[in-house]
Structure formats: structure tokens, C-alpha cells
Length: 81
Image (cartoon, rainbow, N blue to C red; front, side, top):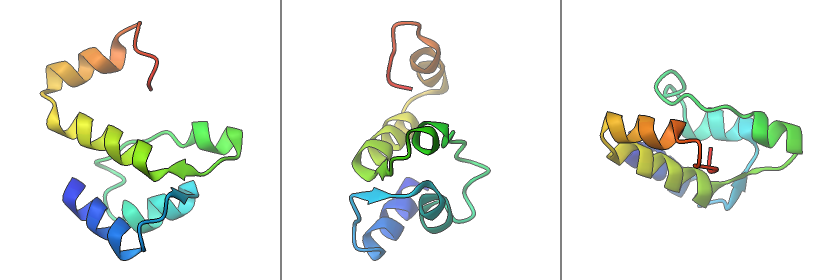
């Protein structure tokens, strides 16, 4: 799934930033049920999604075991997401 997201990003010309709607419609086409993202961070701040940031986070989470994902997601000292 990550490979398909990166392929779509490449086909779009590797934009550095995307608005949340474009990211959802052009990168996550048909994957929004598997990839649950909260767009609140970007929508409330009125900024675009940094593609390097979001792709790195998705790659890291997709490569981890479920127990590690949960631990990093719910660790009170983790300030990433």
C-alpha cells in the first residue's frame, strides 16, 4: 500500500506540500478505510500537508509490529502524533 502511495505521489510530480483534500483524493484513493488519518491538525492551522513528514510517518508505522505501533502511538512521552 505504501508503494502505491509513493507511486501516486511520483506521478503527481512529487509535490512537497498538498492540501488535505488533494492528499485524500489523489494519494489515498480507495485507501481511506485502511489509512485512518485525522486532518484536523492541518485544517485548524490552515496549512498544507508536508509530504515528507506524512510519508515518513506512514512508512514507519507500516513497517512496525502491531505491539510497537500501539506502544509508540499511546506512549505519553511521544509528542509526534
